[in-house]
Amino acid sequence: MGEQHNHIALKKPNFPVGAALSRFLAKHGRSTRLPVAYEDLLRFDGLAAQASPDGRETLWTTVLLRPAEQEDLHERLVELYRILTSDGKPLPYLRVASIDFCSYGNSQPFRIRILNQLNDNYDHYYIKKADASRVYGLELEHLLSPNRINYLVDGGTLVEEHIIGIPGDDFVQEPRKYGGNFNPVRLCKEFVKFNERCFVRLLGDMRAYNFIVDVMQDFDQVQYRLRSIDFDQQSFEGRHRIYMPQFYKENLPFVQLARRHISPETAAQYAEEERSLLRKRYLLAADRVEELLEAMHGQDISLPEHVAMLREELADLHGVGGFRACHNMAQVLRMQLKVMLEL
Image (cartoon, rainbow, N blue to C red; front, side, top):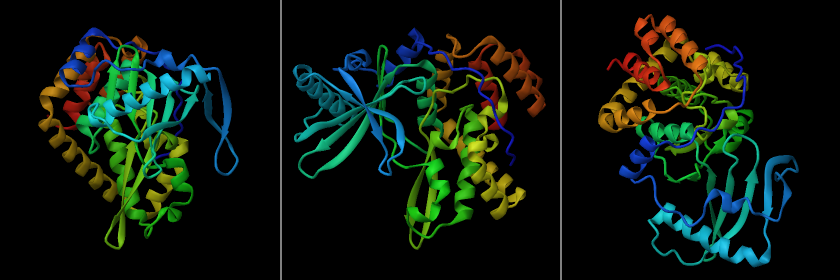
C-alpha cells in the first residue's frame, strides 16, 4: 500500500438524472412524488454559523425560517421522513428539531434532524440536489457492497437516509476512544477490503472524511466496517488511483497502521476475499446491475478526456487491451467488473 497523493483537478459538474435512469429508479421503487423539493429549502430567511461541541467552526450552518413558513415546511419534512422510513405510514410524536445546510461539495445538502418527542431520540436524513453520478454510486453501493442503502429521487431532488458511524478522519486519530478493545489487525483488514470495493466499482474520492467507521462489538473483541458516505465521484475521474483509497494522503494513518500490523501477503489475501464476495454479490444482482449499466450507457457522467485516460490506465494496469475499445464510463465500469471479478 502506498501513499502517493491523488489530485482531483476540478469540481465535478452536476449531471441530471436522465430518462433511462429515471425509468430504472421507477421500476425498482427508488422514485416517488415527494412533499418537499430541494428548491423549497432554498427559500430560507437566513443562516447561522454552527460550531462543533469542542468549539471548532464547521461546514454546516443552521437554517433560519420565517415563522409564517416554518410550520407548513416542518409538516412536509416530517411527512417526507415517514415516506423514507416507513412507506408513509403514520409515525406520531415526530417533529423537526433543526434544518442545517452545507454549501460545500457538489450536492449542497440540507440535513434534517427529526425528534421523537416520546423518548427524545433523534434521527437525521438529507435532501440534496439530484446528481446522476451520485445516484449511480448509491445504487452500486446497495448492490455490490455489504451495505443496504435507502434513498429516493423525485426530479431534481435526492433524499438519503443517514449512514451511522464515526468519520474516518476522527476515528483514526484516537481509535481506542470509540469503545471495545481496539483491534488494529481487524481494522487494517477492513481498510484493505474497503479499498478493493472502491476500486472494483470505480468509486472515487474516498478520503477519510468521506467514509465512516462502524464499530461492532463481537464477544470480547470488536469488528469494523468502513462505509462510503459520499458517492459524487462514481466513475468520473480519469486517474485510476483516484479510485483507490490507499493513495490519499488523508488516509495515510490507515496505510501506516496496515504496514505495521499486516504483511503484503496478508493484504493480498484479504483483497482476494473481498473480490470473491463482490463476485457473489454481483451474481445475485446481475440483472439489476446490467440494467443500471445500460442506463449509464445512455448518458454522460464524465468528460471524454477522463474516459480516454482511465481506459488507457486500466488497460496497462490489467494488461487487457479490451479497455481501449470503451467509449464511455459505463463500458469502462463493465470491463472493470468483468476483469476484476473474473466474470
